Length: 210
Image (cartoon, rainbow, N blue to C red; front, top):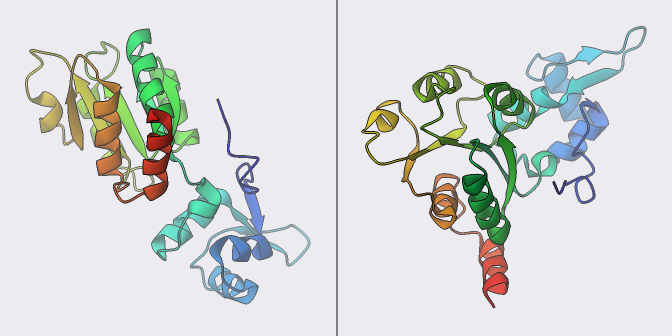
């Protein structure tokens, strides 16, 4: 899997100094220190010193709460988690998202990986196969919406014929009918994640098609 480390110096960093947080947020170091001391930005002090340290997830929370773009931490690509154990469907979606160029895809083929990747990968969107016997999609939706750190994740389900409306009833953000068409899922993600106006993405697709 391609990583963003080469282009994003903050990609793997877990703990930030106040100076680094200021660079990421594009504010002064004193602003970060004031927010830290006022309790608006959580973190900890290095034992035996006055130095402040800020965990990555807390910095992201602070940035989102103050409408600061998180692109410098998260990169330009939208993270997508596919929960499926059908190789054909996985390859179909992988190829479509690679052609688009605006997404980073991870795949979970069992419940353990699905939970682990949801917490570690922090996807912007989850695409899930509704017919998986080991996954409770309505339960997944309830857990996502009930967690303040995960509630903004977009949830798209792929539904086969005869599965009724239960996916929609679960409160998911989008439903794709099978057989799975990778381009249809990509278009749904583009819409849900607000990427329609991304001219760079359009140029990538044009170059791929030419």
